[in-house]
Image 1: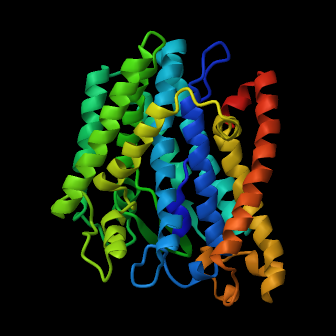
Image 2: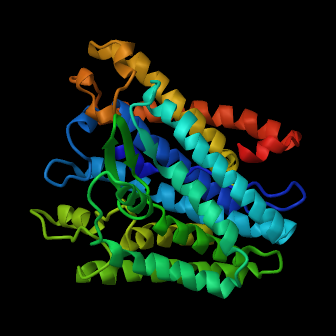
Length: 405
């Protein structure tokens, strides 16, 4: 299911007005927000999205594969940076205030996932299914972090490393059926569908590994304290990012651990590379985390002082990620309503009774990948201007609710 793969985790924790912002974090967060929109536009506009998964090596192309693969960075980077932002807020406001905020915001995000976000996907009520996707996982991880922050930082680091490196040991544990135990295990580690007494449930983002990713980001916040030497921080980021990528290559090559989908030689060298990179996200494997957070750390290392024109525009999006996420869902779906006129369909066909790519009434709908890219760029430009307006409002107003959007 393409959309769940972007993921999207579109939440940052706003630093207090008197505190400094880490510009490279805003830049990275904004960049992956833009990639996230590409994945969702592909779901709603690309004709082939209704026929096969873009990572299906028997049918995909290199361009389509990387159109999907680049969006793998979205969810882990958001989880990770949300933890980093939490650390910085805690240094300013104290752990008690931070814990309360993480708890209340986490609950708020879960509520949003099961209401506003669900409606954005389907434009139908009652919802065809309750989807536990990236916002749910982000909210639950914040709730978990609200308790973890009271532990010493080395303990938190140890716990999250055990989770990230060890959770694949749970891959073979399966709980069949539609009972409470099966649902509970799915919420924690086994992505699954449930159909129980006409209630459809889809768990796309089991939370155990995501808690580890957010806690790792919290530990990274130590490098962004005010008295940290910038050159030392850059060296550490380069070392950690490089180590993650090297570990990915070594562990992936062994095919022994770290991902449920082993790689294999393909008919061409390029497709063998695709197989090597084609790691699992549901739940996110160790290898998935390494190959996404490794480059993200290098990006943070080399963009700390970036002030190019385009960088400044992207940072605007990175400062208001939750606003962007909610608006982009509705904007993409509204654009798809309009697009039905060009494929012999009607807007009513976009009132969905299931996931977009599984809708029989949309047979024959869709456009080329080039058109999908064009729509994506146009929507990102619109989203930038909307984010700029909201960012200006947020900077000049101090209502409590702004920290939750």
